Image 1 (tube, rainbow, N blue to C red):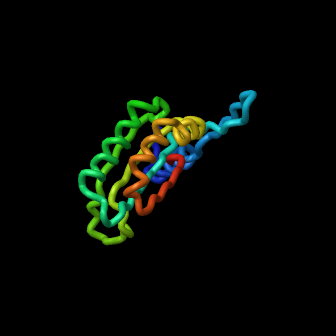
Image 2 (spheres, rainbow, N blue to C red; image 1 turned 135 degrees about the vertical axis):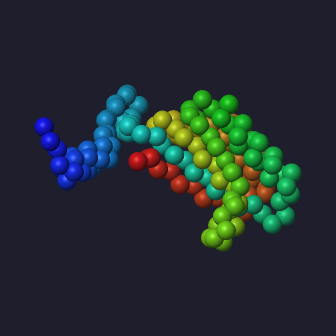
Image 3 (cartoon, helix red, strand yellow; image 1 turned 30 degrees about the vertical axis):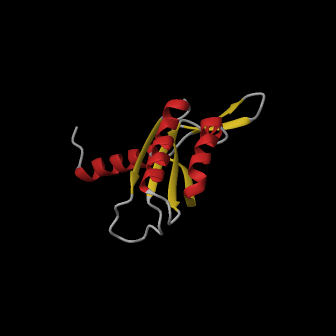
Length: 138
């Protein structure tokens, strides 16, 4: 059976469109309904430190944030880095932390977790601003 190049492109395009759809399943427990998506939940945290923050204080924040991965089992992965973009569009945000969760429920356990709150006590005195974006990876 011969398949034309155009036919192959059409089939592949159809498959790509169909795989772009993220199925959503509803899961119900007695406490509340939770929507579980078949992808990963990303939690992006950008930090801008106060002008007087020392390199040692910023390093302490970085170490404390990274340590959350070993303290809070709901964190699937955590990576971080310091901005090095040449575009000049960072608005003073220098540090990026990128966390992955399996579900909104796991993220919601992380947010009020005592170790996360303790981290906030380390960060708070030198924090100028924070930007947080959560999204489901496509």
